[in-house]
Length: 309
Image 1 (tube, rainbow, N blue to C red):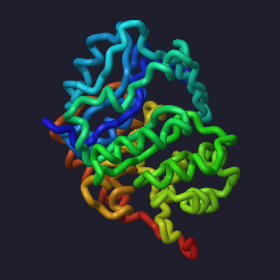
Image 2 (image 1 turned 90 degrees about the vertical axis):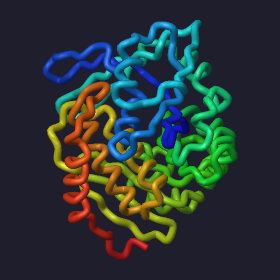
Image 3 (image 1 turned 90 degrees about the horizontal axis):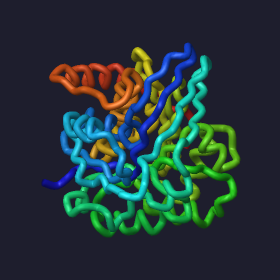
């Protein structure tokens, strides 16, 4: 059976330390958060990622119980599954400390050639993978495999020294790029969110969604029109994957043919679900109705930014 939406990223096991000293160990992270965002709006989702020989069976079972196709998980027998500390401070700041070798992790990451056939004609791919210099080739392969697919990208290791020519190669192949405020500043050198969005459009991105945490997000289309979308109120338990889930929801919205604002509204709803749980979510019959309620709340509060074009 074909997978409609896939995240092409990584799977990381997180050991979380909260500001009050409480801990949660052996929690699945990485690409899981994008899947959470996709799963709010689609029941056909999968993950392409490399894992080690030591991935707990409970994580595989949890993904399957959540409705995720795991045929895209590639087992690297010589590796341990990527693992990291996630350290949270009272102001919401998060420090990630990778506990496994980053060089090996990046060298042995999933490749396009690892994708099973079921993933090759998807409606949308969420991409958070590799160095900027590696991305043009991957994106072109995904585009060739599924010409109509929506390609939504998050940054993995944002750096300010990447040549503009590389960013232009990347942007021209995307449907959407969604950095957070810090990432946007790093790659553009601009601190103003609207100016950052305009520069990314100048580099060839057709659509930009700049995420600002509790302040919501800014959406800017190719004409320069922009909108502010609020963050949906929720009981925040873990802020680790809000941005990833946002992008997962956006991927499905675009893949289903929605206009950018409607797709972005689904993104903010997806983020709200990720923030209120830790690790692999559970899913029950009440979720679709709650998602629609949050969607209506956000739709009533989206605002076009005056004189942005």
